[in-house]
Image 1 (cartoon, rainbow, N blue to C red):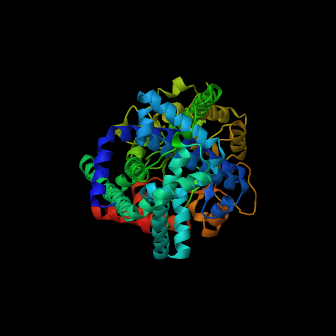
Image 2: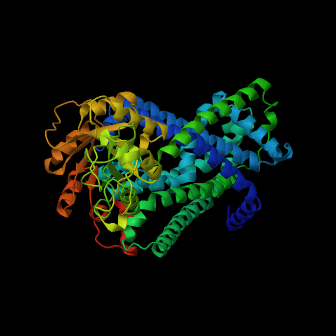
Image 3: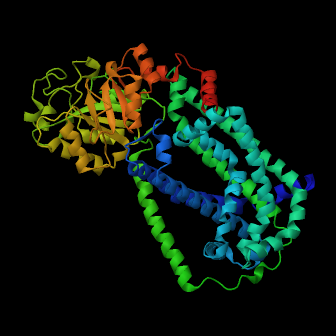
Length: 600
């Protein structure tokens, strides 16, 4: 394949641009719609079945070696191969001239894809689906690299391997694997075409594809250039889009700490860019190999007949059932937020203590809104139960300190509490601020910030616990909140009511790693009693560690150094700066931050 052939390929892909775009959009939607719920829900189940509450640096490898994790990884691998097979079938059928001549419109194309895909899957040649591992690497390498360094779970494993091999050797091995996968793709995709389009067995397909191998040798060098060109284009696109994002944020933001703001939105920006690059790689790389390796195929018309009616019905019913299940889990993921409360792999989060209580009245809507604006990862709030069963935000048993009145919460109705001013004591700016309910706060926080809900029960009847658990379930907040308390019975009650809720004990002192604590997913403890040994011991048990209340910069640095997962503070901006180890920000800081993701 020479430069003129490259030009013909570009022309061919351009002529089929709308078909390619639609095909890859449909595939991308199906792949995400089915795969994301399986991967996320399966990962959660693996952690729970392994006997831990969270995956940490200390128990990461232990969890990976459990039978549940092995089954999960094999399932994800099998699902990935099936998705790549479906994509290959869609592309082969799209470009094949005989397929084009034997179909009518979109409906005809869908029937052909269904026919070839089902006959491939439910035949002995399905064992050749392992071909799609190297094919997937060759086609989607830029996406694999982005996921490897920007997904917390995968990046931890990548950095673990880098430390043992050395970063230079790791990248050399990765490049060699990439080139070998490209070579494999060029030489074996003709076989895949035969397997898809004909009734021939694997051996007969290999034999039939031999005449094309000689052409593949001539085209290999040019296809490597084509693939590398797509890779470099992906890198350039990534850098350009990141630069544009930084530029837009710098214009729109009034905050002078650009690095913190960028960090808060980087995950979403990176996810969008990854999806875009996956779309481009599918169109260009897979489209190119599907067209360039077809050679002079004859004989694949041996695949006789359409799918039996019963087979077609089975496919439709299966697809419908899978779609309903996937929709259910997708809705749960969307409603539950993006953060994972059961992952602790070196990142330190910041909790705004009672909201941004340094600059706004504690446990109020303005304080929580300010915590969101300042980029806090969590908002820590205190809740109590009123006489009429409403869950409200209040730290003390009475309202004397934080309002203009003196009512005992448990003996007062919410209507009575609403008459109080919860802001004037802090500043006239917040005059007439009302005491909020937990439901109001959940509606405000949902999808914006994680929640640390501290229970302040007035008795041991369990009414507060029941009300809080009910609200969390009603709003699907299990994956977006933590429930903590000094009262161990309260935590046990919450866990019994809803085992999916992440729970934690609050200690001033007296915690020991030698004691097994029931229902402890999170250890929330005064920072003065935290040491590296305490943190490491908790992590080995899969327990996340939160330190309170840390307002001194030196103590914040110590918490980060010993591996604390969550810093509860009255000064969110300071904690953020300490975590990112920057006291100023600008474009150079942001690029250093991005570079650190791929080099640490």
